[in-house]
Image (cartoon, rainbow, N blue to C red; front, side, top):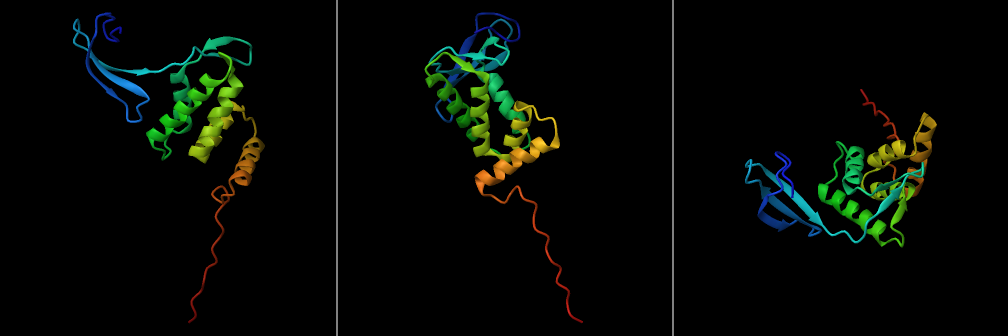
Length: 169
């Protein structure tokens, strides 16, 4: 593993342990040349995935890019990191288990939206607004309407106004 500080190819593993969900191995490394310490993660990759963009361009699937997109949508939301990690692992497993090594970007986006819908409604709307390229307020109204219908939750509805009870003299 190349040292991120000095670029040396001779780094040493000091400690290895599985992550909490045992989906990857966390390794603490040290560079004997510069003394830099850093952490790497090792994950199982079932197959090489290629994402086919809307323009037709093909790019290698990048799990880190997927995670960053999800984290942007979840910024300042009360969702445990373990749940986010499980969601991302599930999306990657679904993509890898599809028959083809090429996956349309729309499929990735739909899987992320589906996962976020189960985690946090606000993050779902945030991601959808970028993914679906919302341009007007009515775009938000439509997705909020669908979200309210699908969940049956009243969370998205404005709270009912409380009547003031006046005390008698």
